[in-house]
Length: 473
Ligand code: AMP
Image 1 (tube, helix red, strand yellow):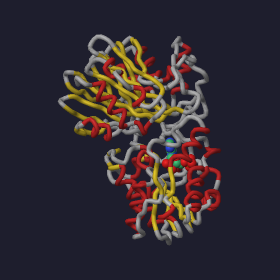
Image 2 (cartoon, rainbow, N blue to C red; image 1 turned 90 degrees about the vertical axis):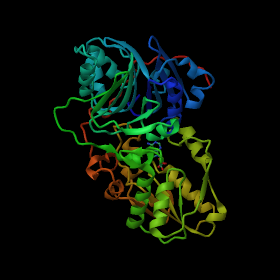
Image 3 (cartoon, protein in one colour; image 1 turned 180 degrees about the vertical axis):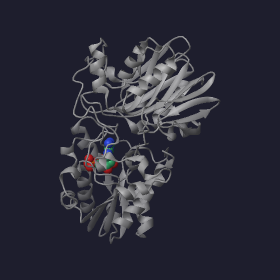
């Protein structure tokens, strides 16, 4: 059981349709996690929860959002690595604490959770789940500060790593982001009510106006009195380290992340890629959907026409985000089909966003060649991934990362391409506009982690795990 999570969070405060809007928000954050979904609401007296394994559309079918009474709600979508697919791990978590009843939903990965859990257990804490976010509730409850904001500041000052989180208390909603600002988190407004979301695409869907990002290290508390904002106490100045992989792959292209349009950043990555690794070819195509924006940029920059060389079955989820290897292989096959009439006799530039294990690219390249292409020039709009992420993106261990174990020439032969080019780290960072390139974390490409990873290689074995009966869908 690991700590790794890929997640999306959403919060609504002071709206008569809070839980329904939260459900819609989660719907558009589905790409951030497809294993489980949950919403917790508060009606001024009681908390209500609906949490289940499965997609948002399944979890909240029928009248379930009507059960979630009240004008405030928080929600979560989650993907976790194998083993933690455990029903009592579904977020938002809820607890009775010394600071009142609190529910929490978290995107990210706490890098010192293991040591904090050990310390807390020694003094009697009983952990109910295997998720690192539970640490926050324990620390909050044990804080000696009687004032909630002081207790929260102290708590969030103790945890390290990546967290973009929402918390629902009795009559208030909290949004907070770690001091590096690894994962995105934004604030929106509609009908005089506030909303918090991992990505702006969720605000677009519910018709909320984008106000601003929650700043790195910022805590906001939204209540009927308005918004108060303060900073997580810190002994040192911490540089922002936004996750560049949100731009490369993880976020939706219609979102604005870290101040930039994800689509336009990806398109620029494609342009840079074409400058760094030009190719002689008849058409440029993408691996849909993740390579679309970069392929357009590559085509524009190179002057080689863009073509649709493959179509996608939209009813199949993201290949990676499936806990079982057997399912993953199956989805790779059913997801994309080459268009033979486009590819026959053509020299093709194939653009994809990233190479992780390399198995998907290998299958795609052979399918494109089988469909009649004469040459395949594979171009990847990010650098080789050589190191695992400890800040919330699910990456396999180094032994499974193809670029950690093979040279570019070896990878080219493995995937069966005629040529292969990766975007450089500089080219990738240069494709963002809103921040200086030093404001990004690119540890999965460079191995330079912006913080000390205390949990490395450690797992919470079986902590709080109970095998609950879960209805099969
Ligand atoms: P592979 O090289 O076969 O492991 O698959 C790489 C593809 O998976 C990329 O083209 C991305 O579209 C996608 N991908 C990369 N990283 C992730 C991730 N952390 N979660 C889900 N999908 C990913």
